[in-house]
Length: 94
Image (cartoon, rainbow, N blue to C red; front, side, top):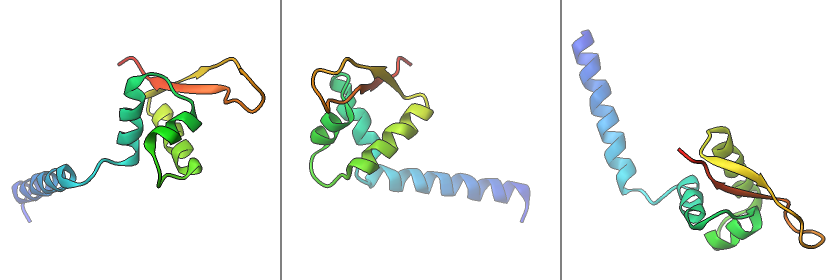
């Protein structure tokens, strides 16, 4: 296969993936980012905002990954009562 042909196929596959992605429902990370558009939230508040069907561990996993990617910022928070979440997440200033 020539380099031109390989490049054509690579671009074709990339276009196909993008078209397929446009028709899929939003991913968990996209929903987390959308929910944080209203302002900072703790993990339990974010879980409540996302609705049913999400496990707390899965949401925390995605929060950690979004922080690692630089899309979210972790802010410490004063505890209001025993058992209250100590951290909240907000969108990073990009």
